[in-house]
Length: 456
Ligand SMILES: [Zn+2]
Image (cartoon, rainbow, N blue to C red; front, side):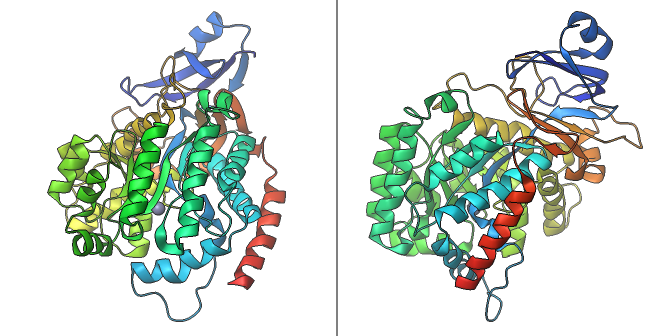
């Protein structure tokens, strides 16, 4: 593979280096970043590399999404029959648990493909997915993995086991997780070792998991050496269910059930109290903030700053909203200020830390069980993954490494991403998708989603 030298841009390294290099360049060698510096210097050092001109724009690490649901794509623009749902349990029962039951494997693939297009277009290069299709469980993770492989981004997959559809579907979900996890050490081994595909053991949420199911999954996950991916205290109803039925807060129930740990993702954590935060910190369990989803479902606000203060690694996800993580960052920045009526909370640099540094930690947690030498992501550094995006952003005010977060929040957005590279391979150049046929994907998805809406 020829080396690629991306130059004539402002390199935003983020990471511990956190530097801004004007007239900078990045050398990509075999999927990794090999050198960073001034354009003029690197051009002299690597005259044989293929030169890619960033046209004075930004050269920065790809965005990361630590919690999403590819299967939700067909809900865009869909009307829910009857009166609007009044609360989160009604949203689940009337929208999501009706939609997921109707998904076929073909719908699952098309739904994932919509998100792949969106991810590449908005510069999101690593994604953690949580899938449900209770009437088409077997093979669903393979269908998604094939779409991910075709697209060329990195993804960690999981099937959300739940008792909500009966014992047969529980068994299907367990089998699907375990079968897929095993395939990452067999037929998909090279893809997994390269850090392109990974898996967690998926669990829906405490309130839809029986004692027996939780126990069975704890044993399975431990045997397979993976962490879990579960919704935790997203709505107050999850805490009420757990305390009423088991006499334990949700996090305490999951800890007793051996679900927590450094490879586990506890998404949402809106209603956890301080004792639960300490348990998450102590067990080094990761958590993921999804502000757009939480606002949309009106479930409340994750106490992000408190969580971070007690030592929980809190990342950022989109919970099925668009893959444009800059939007998620902007909403994270605004939500807490309004909710707490305090403009000092959730400063821009903290938002950037959630989206890059903390999310990078989560990616390492979920990819490293299958990829022991999983490279650093979410930063431009020597040895890091060549997951790089180029943006048309000409700062109208001085841009420094110190004020970059506020430029991102107030002036940057997904439409400025013109090129996306993952693992040293261009997935989009000058807004042309190179691995996916967007027109075909969207046309097919429109047909399939219309058919699904009709079935609903
Ligand atoms: Zn979710």
